[in-house]
Length: 318
Ligand SMILES: Nc1ncnc2c1ncn2[C@@H]1O[C@H](COP(=O)(O)OP(=O)(O)OP(=O)(O)O)[C@@H](O)[C@H]1O
Image (tube, rainbow, N blue to C red):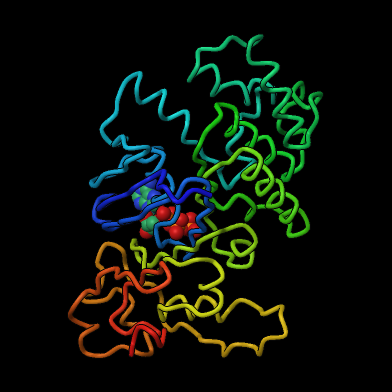
């Protein structure tokens, strides 16, 4: 894997009226990596993912994709660049047009981005149907004839049709039966490897993210509060919120079970974030500084960054 950033995000903001869904996010996504994005419901994961591919328009900030600020693109250049940035949605039932044949659904982005005719797109569609394990006969059928897992394979084929370099997978297995989830995650892992894809994999399920992500980013109230390599993260998080999230994941190894940390209270209102550190009202380590002064996202040894005045790692606190 090369360590070059494919996306460089700086000061990204998305507001919905008074709701500040994404707040000043700085982030690099490296070419060929899968970055797992985790956090509680409503923390802004989907909005950040959608903004990165401009399905949702950012309110402020920049997103450089291969050196080009895609927030400023329009017209033909935007359409062509946008084809390289694709999205797999959570709901394989709602995101596929029930009246269209699967082959036409998968061909749609090729026709829109490349102006390809139905006949010209067909061999590409057939290959994709094979690659996602559905077989080319599936192209003649309609979405309601498939199970949830199969529909998600159609969604994946549609996202891959324009040969994207970057894919946002937004909770791609959360709507599926647990028995099917591993199959779809494994399919995605194979496709990432074979096609050299770069992926943002959004999930509230740390167990799933652990299987597929090279690095983990944790979001809280619209901000990235920790970002770290997968193994380092699971070995010991640096942010108290990450620690609480991790403590709720069952351990499968022989390592001693972690103390379960109950988070008290609801996440704060994104229209009215607390002063100081956004997590301080629920943090068991909070000191006075945390109530008044917002911590910056600070780089730590080992390529980790954390937004905390008192990170949990010894090498940082000494
Ligand atoms: N289109 C919208 N209009 C208004 N508010 C929105 C819109 N989309 C998201 N929000 C709000 O923005 C905040 C972040 O939502 P978002 O869906 O990005 O979070 P999430 O972490 O992906 O949650 P979930 O896992 O439940 O999807 C929430 O307060 C949500 O209510």
